[in-house]
Image (cartoon, rainbow over all chains, first blue to last red; front, top):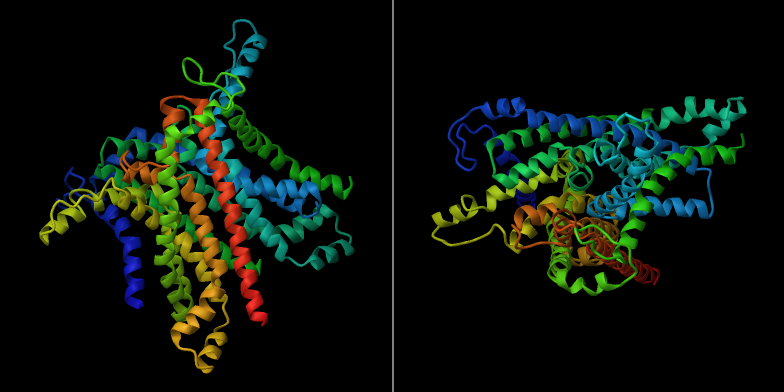
Length: 270
Length: 283
């Protein structure tokens, strides 16, 4: 049994190790080791396309994770006091958001937004002041952030709600008995207690958005995120540079994951 | 401001976001699936079931998905279960957390990069070259259903191990002792006690993996090399290459329907299985 577990761990980590190993390859052939070198890391970091894609990915991940954390937390708190059919509808929406495959979300967002933009853009052009460039809506960072926020908001609601459910109602009641306003109770009692869950939700949302390929593939318009860049590079052939980028991305995800874990573990003490 | 109104105000932004970015897009997919293809691609309004009648043209994609998704889920389950069992039942509590985290960590790194590692391993200079050293020649691994299955198991194993681990970890270990005190051998104890009690974990793991696999695009795209493709790959082709929005919408909507039906049937089966077990335990 121990041997079996060892084999599974090998299965899980060998591919990752191979990528890391080949990223230090001196030669340009991706599948032959020819000595140690860090040149591909230098090349990747000096490649303007890689850096542009990285910047786009970071902005999208940060903005969408922030929006998702704020809106998701508000919704989770509000949902606590809502019962009946409205609650059922909202729970259904969260369920659908999580269950629908990313690829369908991507497609649906693409055709819906393009159709809506086709209606709005002529109107914008008509009402725009004479001589000025009329504003024109198109697929890009905005649509990407909106789509990622939709999905990650559902994640945040689920995580924060689980935490809210485990809080004792007596705490809020005690606070109210001591003449705290509802907002005061939220800020001084509830928020500190659910803060770890919100932060964990933020980090998971950030990781999801940063790693997402399939939704971005459809809704990013002319923008290139890092996963899109990696995918199109692989299509053109495997290079050690991609291995270097992959290794860096994995290390960055790991660091975020460790931070999220530490925060969640410190959680119970508030 | 009343409590009721405040709750609604808190929920409103998320609600509006879901309406615009989820309900509206999915409705558009449904409406477009009843339309026709424009002369230069895109969509022309119509009310016809023609797109659905044409679904058999993409039968291979549906067949591959409906065969390889359950197969991959099953393979992941068979590999994950012994590991989850070892971690939950046989491992020193001191090491449990760290060993479990080691299983889950890969899942939170980019599946794109992890799948692409297998292009190396299964490609001509990887495993096949190694097999040639042992005199086994002409083995082709990459761009086969086998490669796609390996990619699936590799990609989703952590998602399968975690829920099974949780259900086995919660299991009261005294039940196992009681079973053996009453004269049951290890196999009987496993089949009559451990396995039935871990069904919720198995059910959750299979459901999660199956749902994600139904919409899979990357693994077949990278490891199937255009020969083994899923519905996801057909959708990318229909929307980004041939720009056939009406037909693509029909394919997407059918995929959602298949998922809804299979998940509902599956949940019914699982709850029946568990109710059945409860009846037995009452006796």
